[in-house]
Image (tube, rainbow, N blue to C red; front, side, top):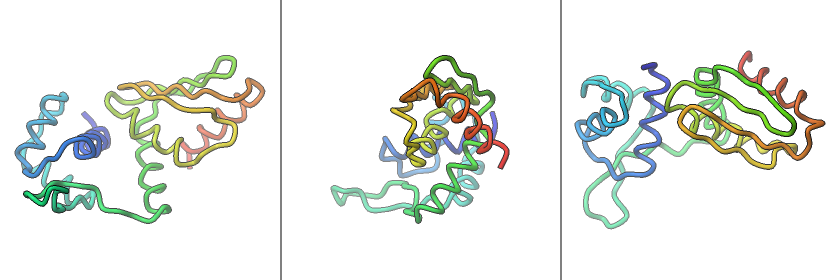
Length: 152
């Protein structure tokens, strides 16, 4: 699977689980369909700027994504969005985006961060994002905006 999809999955895993060893992260990735070596996980951790921090209970450490400025975070999500979204279609006041498998949640995070006034909300599955608009009148404009994100 693609590097970007794997890195998105790493972010999802460390956000919901207290992982403290690269081997454990590689095992969790394998459970999610990403068969990688510990060396690959090590490179991803380095490339993504993931660090270990003290667990809230003070007993050991866990991996976490470094806190970044809003611009850095938005740029990162923009890159992930561009590398993950395959197609954009609309009907009435709904836009459906197909993504690489396992990438929808992280790609959807950019939509949430951009906080478009026209968007009521966005929901992500494994490889699909559903964006609900306030009005069907904004559908074509919003599809154009999302396509611009893909091409910028």
